[in-house]
Image 1 (cartoon, each protein chain N blue to C red):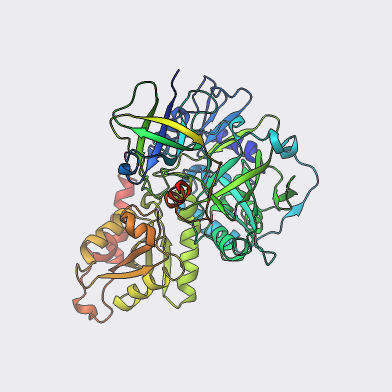
Image 2 (cartoon, rainbow over the protein chains, first blue to last red):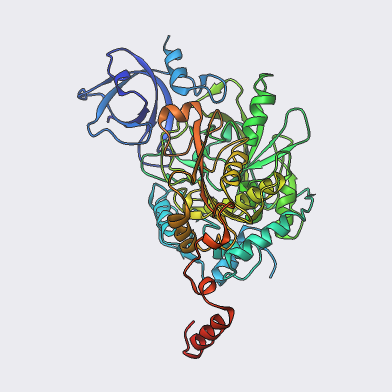
Length: 98
Length: 475
């Protein structure tokens, strides 16, 4: 059964460039581990592709985009990205893509 | 009355004063229990004790410990109906009589010890506080203990921490916070992890002290002792050398990574908004969790009129008053109204004018700038009387000459909703003083007189009117 995730973005166009991107997904599976974060390399699509996991996207203020996306996880990434405290997390994800 | 010596004694005391509601029916950790707490903040309602949390048998959650002046009074060991002015006076007195902590060897917070591979943050009933937050926030009403790398300075602060996964938390103590300063000045340049302890459910005065605006290098454990009127008992952590309140319900021991980050936020914060301040936080790996056998997790449903509104109202106002006095401002009273989301201060002065208003705003933004609006009033205006302050502001503040704006870079409050995302990223901001005082150069004979009983009637007539008023049975 497909899963449901959400992710927070500063720039939604980054998700839809057709390439593999590095991102953090929050697992919305009900239960004690709901909202667990996983860092992944993935491909995002909109409209959602059949057979892929569903993805809801939110802005940096937590506003939910009205239409769902789908996500295909290519590989799991380490729990944390390289970067000193208070450095930009979105930049760190982009660096991890290279 | 004496100040309650731990969370459970406090809960019993507010139950007796009619300020706690116990909920035995099941409640969902996913938004529902926090929603109830949120509504209670907005309606100045009770604290809640949730005894039956979905998915988490054996755990209890309590909300918004001192989000009202009544519960704040009980925390300080005072009658629940103590006036706000009196609470301010008590805090100012006790802040000057700090009491050093004592160290103990055994404590209930060590009844259960989880470490290493067995650590799983999802074993705690961490609530999802608001729909659309970046994750579940474990640190909302906490004490985060850290120690300076190069000195004996130990800091207690109240900072937000979010569950990233089983073993990692992300948090947002601001870079300008005392913890941020310790981390950036001491540990990061040396590439060393910084040990911290996130304490949940200690006695309320310890949390109050952690949330308080207190001097750099000050010892919040001593402040907590002063507020409670007895020494705080401390015990050493299990996996590091930090000392934590022994009466805590839960202690999360962790180390902040000097070279790793993960998603943190967004989060609905104390100013009353979720403003998009995500992307520049810190990340820590949990090394151990210790707790009591029947633990209570505390939650402050952050937002408009949360517990930080009252704690910062008092401690922030007293700190502002002391700072203004130190700089020679003729300050009489300071009030930080909880409704202002820690962005507004009202300052009364013996002698006002443009120079004083400018000085006030400059002094209050020297190191970091949390307050962005200051209303400076004459000392015949009671700063605690908001209708009187509003009347004075609306009528006495000259729209052009009475507005004094001070801009700054690098120390603005990133949580201020009025700032754009760009201003927030660069810590660009401004504070304004509204001069609501009569210009001192105006002659007395041509300075307007307020049309109130106390100013436009003779003392004899005032007395007669009050006598007649009381005789009619009016209050």
